[in-house]
Length: 440
Image (tube, rainbow, N blue to C red; front, side, top):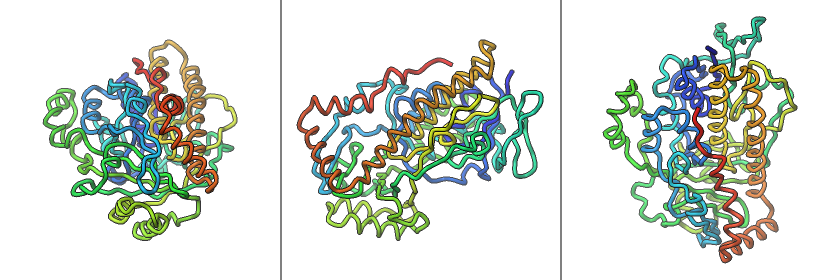
């Protein structure tokens, strides 16, 4: 039997924990937040085929069913590229965007970050320790590793996993030369409740969209639940209880509101990341002067408490290191700007791949270090490919006027030439072969 400690109770770390529990492996998660509701915020996540395959593989069936019931469709209207007057320059058809995938375990979902984290915590119970701030690790003479905490305590494991985010302390100790660099862009995000917003155009409520004005960049997407919390509970409560899970715990803190999420991307330094929501809202409204009045209304009617600013940074590819009894996943190793829309999915992919490797090691089919080394080799390849894509899109989002004029012209060309549109976008969003679910 091997034991695994996970530093960080975010989406990637909790997905790994669920998979390891399902495989019968001893696992404990240490989260610095004091309690589960410390971060009841966040925006809609797009779960792509990689993320879906990982969740399906790691979650027990009742929790997977709870995820698909409480998530939403990513939008049945495809992916639109619009100008600032809401004229469609290019519409990537739904069958191209989704790739014809109908199996939920290989498809796309719109997920609430709050709800997904609640689902991933369900059933873990005392395996998750809140208020445990990691200060580092110490490798022991017997081949195990000790995790140290700010309260003076510690815990020993066969493997320690750093899933503690972009500012990972474990990464700084394990890979002191690994750096993060500015992406040259930043984002301001907000939410607009859908209830009572009949004035919203169908294009913005029926699909994902990028608005490409002469400067800046606006992304919109909706979170519309397939079922309300009450409907999901009525449908799944018996199965949840039969699996030994607490229905009150699972359904008690889920997102209760459907909304349109918007993300305004602008050059780094154009806004103060510490500014309040009202100040940020005024800034984006000034930069959106002359846009369609409905776009301006989306920004103006978003509540200040939902509006936040974020600086974009990305990890640099680290120098090769010798695999040992400490490894990393998610933002702790390959953080990236949100412009690629794949950060959470890459972390989930890490979780499933590492879970599979550790399951093999626990079964005795290969040594633990060999299994972890194989995980790291694959993770670094696809993880930093995702970083590169996200950085490229961040640069495109803040390109100068000449480059933006060319990009707008190219989008209009794609909109009028279907073979070109399919050639450009199909391989970018459809990777069904590599996203196949695999049994642990």
